[in-house]
Image (cartoon, rainbow, N blue to C red; front, side, top):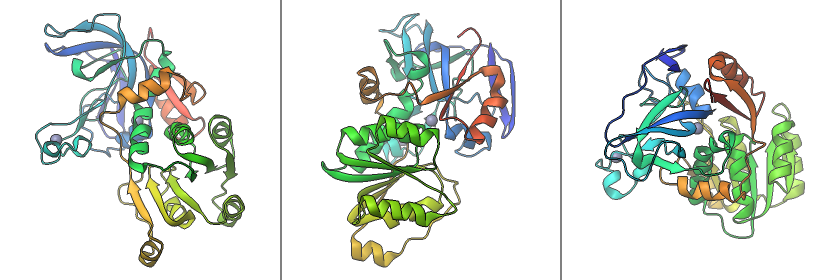
Length: 341
Ligand SMILES: [Zn+2]
Ligand SMILES: [Zn+2]
């Protein structure tokens, strides 16, 4: 089968590899589409603990092609996605029920082979049916599950004034969830362009254009919208410099959610007196572990819309072009299709 195979960071090729064998509790999935994510760009650089050689891709959707001898409830032809994250079940955190904080977490597309291939094998226990979702939208189940977890972490109260910095793919999903769950008024701030326009159409009550060279302009615009700041501020750009901006915009007693993916060595300044005096809470939200079911419900009922978030499509063999496209931040969400999909 054809696959994108990394031997080491930045060293990849599109080549023939053997089809993965399946164990008795595995299913073999014929990949129909796989989303390219910011995490994949880190994996390309060797960050996030990838285990090489590796076929990346954790946002895959496809049809079951074969099932292991002991698999029940699934058969060839079933349309599915699979939860990419697997907790070990026996570490310090897992034994306290904190599976997302597992010390031995493994993921398809990071430590185990993923979906940038014609086929991949997954444990049957990780599989979810996607019924009617088009393939290009089914790749958004995993990012949506991450946004559902972000909602759990934030636990926004009804009537909240919410500000989100950033309008990338998971941000667009999180913004829709915020608008449906707690935010009486949602403001999205991001550079002017198609991402901010889409946020305005899908979720935001107000949008503010951010010019990184002129922060006073968006600060003024945000003050006009809410002179007392915001109950919740979500930092979803992944730019470390915007974290301090998020803290600056939160009102007394409010909360900041650090939701982007940042370079591992990055830091940002926080004034401890402000945290103390203003009782500011700073929270982090990382990935998801048991949130595919709720994410699917939002997508299948059309309450979260992702059709226009998927903006750029490439054949798998054009992996280099897809990477370049993502680095240039041209579109919103890039999806790749293996041959015959
Ligand atoms: Zn992802
Ligand atoms: Zn564990």
